[in-house]
Image: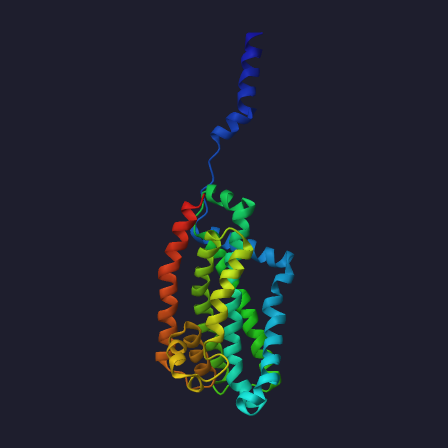
Length: 280
């Protein structure tokens, strides 16, 4: 009888869940690349399930390009065809710059819904939640660029820089936009609501876009305004994009875009992570 009891006790210990858990090996936490790709996939799924958020990338750029080309092209440049050659690179810069705020908006929504707190408790590389979302935003920027350039070609835009110049211009835009997005990730943590963030982004992006060389040649502006236009980051990007698309870009123009982008990252990426860690 005692032998049977010992046998039953041994069998119980072998199959008991607590013993199985104690004997199992804890899985290794994901590395930085794996966790970043997981959050990038999450951002892609968000676009899939809420496709209307892509309207700013698809519909609005088309409206802007058609409106400015055919309403103001004749008055500003004398002909719509000539103005399109000048305008399209600028509209492309304006469109992509305006949609950089979405990373901050998504982050702000995660904070308000409590998802943010769950991420901070996970054994992952902490910046992966932000970097993954920023990488998916590059998909948004690429799609907006493809739509704008495709429509421009249909309307008569002819880039003298050829395919290589167009690709180079898009790459410069992607670099700048990725860097510019860090501003809105920091703002997304600071702002208490999505509406507040959108208002702040509008107050920043709107003046930078319209007080620039996106729509007009700076030489036609008052001298007191030209100084600001020339150092405006949007103007610096638009100048480089125009140069690459039209085949007369210089390394100096590209270099200034790289410098401005680096400044954004150096300042706002560490600031974002500091705020991200200390957010209550």
